[in-house]
Length: 116
Image 1: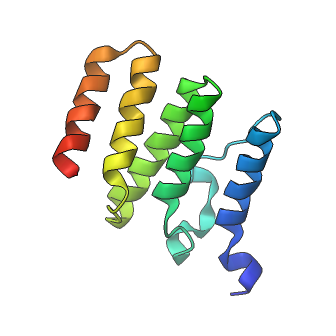
Image 2: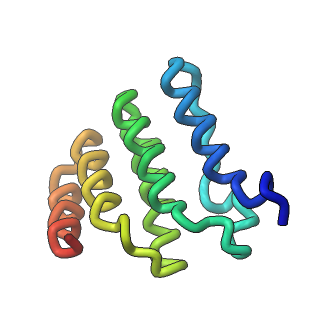
């Protein structure tokens, strides 16, 4: 595997962050778009998806943030990579709250407290 291939996911995420900072549209590819996940190239994807969700929340785009966080939770469930799971739950609660689903937001907030 080349260096370029092994770091394609963080580079793609960085490009999205840069686009958000310059107020350009943020393209988003869900977990189903990354065929390299099974090769181990997806290490840390929960973190990167949560970071992208934070950008969406700052741009007042909670639906897209929620989708990015669903992808992060999918990655956590698939890989058992749980080191960033509490933050993913906190951000999911924030996205749901901003979307007006206060009851479900509270459930995710409680999950975050349990996993801290």
